[in-house]
Amino acid sequence: MKAKDAIKRIGILTGGGDCPGLNAVIRAVVKTAIFKYGLEVMGFLEGYLGMIKNMTRKLEALDASGILHQGGTILGTSNRDNPFRFPTIVRGKKIFRDVSDQAIRNLKRNKVDALIAVGGDGSLTIAHQFFQKGVPVVGIPKTIDNDLWGTDVTFGFDTALQTAMEAIDKIQTTAASHHRVMVVEVMGRYAGWIALEAGLAGGGDVILIPEIPYDIEKVCEVVRERHRYGRRSSIVVVAEGAAPKKGEIVVHKLVEDSTDPVRLGGIGYRVGNEIEKKTGLETRVTVLGHIQRGGSPTVFDRVLATRLGSKAVDLVMQGRFGKMVCLRGLKIEDIDLKKVQGDQRKVLPNGDLVMTARSIGVSFGV
Image (cartoon, rainbow, N blue to C red; front, side, top):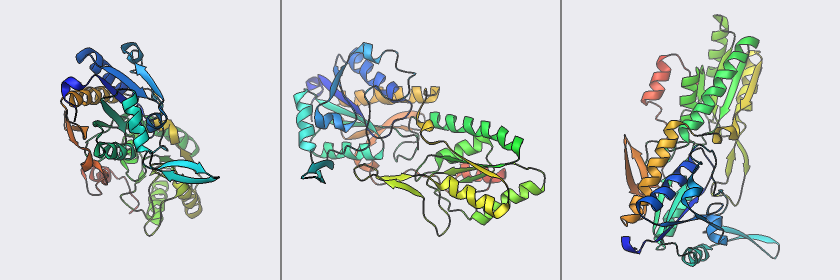
C-alpha cells in the first residue's frame, strides 16, 4: 500500500442509486484533500463506468463550492456497470466480462494513488473486490434505505424520511376529507426503516415492513374497527419489500446487468385492492417512488456526509485502506470493507421502535 508521502492524487466516484447528500460528501472529500493535505482530486463520472471507460473530471475547490445543498451528484452515478461483470455485446449476444484490469489501468493512467468509493452494498462490494486486487480503496456508505451493515445511519436516509413523512402528512388531510383508506408505498427494499420511521412520524395506522410478514385479514380488521368507532379514514404505510405470510414480495421487473437486478414495486396496489375488496371502503394508493431520492439534504445528512467525506480522506492519508467510514453512536469510525459484505441492517421485529409503535396502537398486520 502507498505511504502517505506517495499520495498526490486521489480519485472519487459515486455508485449505485442517487440520494441526497452525495454532493455534500464530494464537497467534503475535495475540500479536505485540497485544503488539509494539498492533494489533487480526480472524479470518475457515472460511477464505475467512469473507471471502465476513462471518463473523468478534475475537481478543484471551486467545483466543490455551492453544491452542499444540491441533491443528486455532480459526478453522475450508475447501478448497472460492475467492472467485474460488465455487459458486452458479442456477435449480437450479450455476455458478461471482467474488465476490472481495464478499470485499474485507467486509475494508473490518471495517476490516481487511492480511490474513495461512495455507494451502497453493491458499490462497496465492488470496492472491496478492487481492494483485493491491490487498489488502495476507502469506502463511504450511502443509501436512503439505511440497510447497510456496519454503520448506525447512512446519509440520505434522514432526507428520504422527511420527504416520506411530509407526503403522509398531506395524504392525511385528503384521507380525512373523503373518508378513504389511503395506502402509501415507500422505498426500502428488504429493510423497513423508511416505512417504520416515516409511518411512525406521520401517524400511520398500519405499517407493513419486510421484517414482519403481514396477514391482510388483520390489516382489514384494523381498518374496519377504526371505521366502527368513527375514524372513517385510515393510513396504511407499506414498504416496497413487504410481503404477506406465506407470500412473496412483489417484483416489478428484473434488470439483468444491474448490481442489484431485482426492482420491487406494486405491493401498495396489491394491499390497496385487497383492503377495498374485503372491507368495501374506498381505498386509494400513492407510490412515492424516486421522489424519496431527490431534493436538498437535511441538516443531519449534510453534516453526516461532510464528516464521513473528511474522515475518508484522513484514512487515505493514514494508509488505512480496505476500510469503510461509519457512524457509531456519535463518533465517526471505520470498519473493514470485508465485514460489510453479505449482511444487511434490518429492523428488529421486537426492537425499540417497533415496540413503541405497537404501544400507541400501530398495527403491523399480525
